[in-house]
Amino acid sequence: MNAAIVLFPGINRERDMALALERASGRRPAMLWHRDTALPEGLDLVVLPGGFSYGDYLRCGAMAAQSPILGAVREFAARGGHVLGVCNGFQILCEAGLLPGALLRNATLRFLSMDCHLRVEAEGTAFTRLWKRGDVFRAPMAHGDGNYFADADTLDRLEGENRVAFRYCTPEGAVTPEACLNGAIRNIAGVLSENRRVLGLMPHPENHVDPLLGSEEGMPLFRSLAETLVAA
Amino acid sequence: MKLRVTVMPKNGVLDPQGKAIGHALGTLGFAGVGEVRAGKVIELELAETDPEAAKRQAGEMARRLLANMVIESFSVELA
Image (cartoon, rainbow over all chains, first blue to last red; front, top):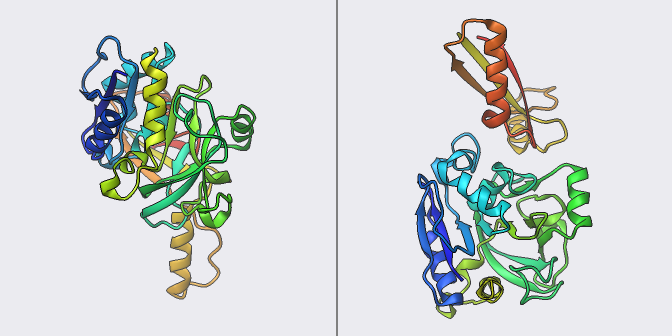
């Protein structure tokens, strides 16, 4: 799997992401700069990592969505390339129109830095093939704007096309309002594009890939990608 | 030519910031405060001298960047 991580000013999770990708695939991802206008040849995966690109000015991800590299990422996605956006990366994908909806300020107005539990909703995608629908895993989250919103028609379409990838849930897998601390509509933590090759999610599975840090529960996501894209 | 773009959360979109401000006003003793909604104001200085053309330009800027049309609406006026 040939992966590349895009760096924007203010991003801070790129090294965690690089470790997770290398652990899963055995290959070190390339690092790209936001001013680049082209992606390297033969790329299988582009990752927009977490952080606070451009200081979250105007809206989270709004500035990054207009940066030069996004044109190349948009073309890559249009050609059927796989794109993963985590946390700020998810916000950027929404602002760029590569995923539907938007991320609002957390309903409590609090920055949430803690573990959450996610239930896998969409199985068999390049990101989730090593999980089954209904599987629950733990992942850290760290965000002030993770309150997913889309209008009712968009939400119904997402659900109808099985494009909700993950939902916030209790450790037992129950999808309840209490398990959804940021207030995201219908407990949505991650969504897929129409061709299921672009995924955005708020929590950080890349921070649960090493037993030294207490958990490897995020690993299936990266192994799924490595297994899917090794053949590509 | 100076223009003012006002960006507000759309009706029906949760506005936790507005809610918190309303709550704080109640705490300060201001009675009778109904719904409070918080948005942002962006002032632009444009080279364009025709007011209608300038408004159209600012509207295009709002649609493409200043507002996120999924969650926000905007209005444009001459400042």
